[in-house]
Amino acid sequence: MTAKTYQFFPNPEVIEIKGEAPMLVETSKEVSNCRLKSSSKSRGYQPPSDIEYALPPHPAFVDIREYLEKNEIKGYGTGAIVARRFALNWRWKFVSQWGVILIANRHTSGSFPYAPYRVKWFDEQEPEEGAWAEDLIVIHPCVDESYLSDIVESQGIVIEDKR
View 1 (tube, helix red, strand yellow):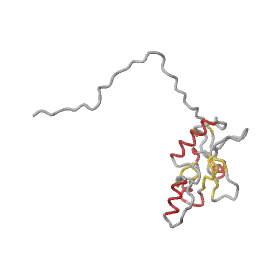
View 2 (cartoon, helix red, strand yellow; view 1 turned 45 degrees about the vertical axis):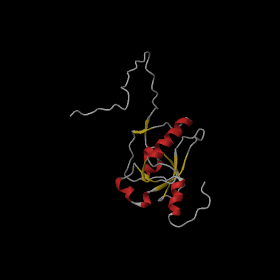
View 3 (cartoon, helix red, strand yellow; view 1 turned 45 degrees about the horizontal axis):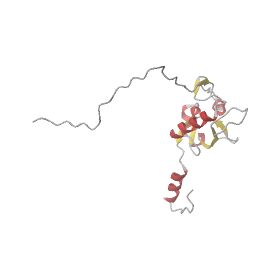
């Protein structure tokens, strides 16, 4: 008995393209000290000085949008609960050491260095500080508005206007 073979797709064709290969533009990464100022406040701890950041302190608008979109997939965004990546290892275990991302900055502010996120730390009396995803770890990811509405409705709250 012989087995039948089926061909669902045509055989691939090799197409040779002549000319120069396109230049791939890679976004410039910048190596610098930790940009999260509160990481340096810990007694007896110094954050590393060779952290690789995806963007410079004064990025272009297009790069900002791409940076925020990539990191939102990883859980960074408004409402995310975060901890300092470069702090003593035990600190991420305690709620008092966590913070919440209040806003994702979509625009630069002129001559001031850009910071993608504004974080309010639970243990600080000071106002929120600018932060980069490279300086944080996600404890709980951000949720979008529709998912947040679903959570509230599942607990018996009726939402009249779903925008």
